[in-house]
Length: 176
Image (tube, one colour):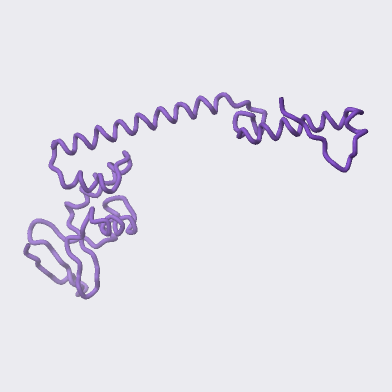
């Protein structure tokens, strides 16, 4: 790879990649890709989008313009649900390969299972009464048992036979 350098009008060093393009600093690369600099660093640290050049004296990261499209594709695949390991497999395989087809089929199955779980959650939420701030449907079995025990205890206290007992001990109420 042939690097060429030239001076900008203000005397700053401008780096180029021959006639094929130019180097982008991390901020400009992030802006063109529509992500934050932190996101670019994250993908660089996970070896998904490796800088084309790292200046040894300043540790500045430089990218090629053609890497913008790769980062955008990675972000799109992440939004669809591919994990980091799956993205590595995706990048290691070629267009139209069996590996990529299998990754997409696996992702499709996961999304379908998630959709089924979401539909079930929606059905449960639709069963909830609108005016009850703590509906029975959301209570755990222990909360339901405690509620029933509390109700029976209050009922027992309202009966004369229960009050005539020793009030130092709470009456034993059996749930049946």
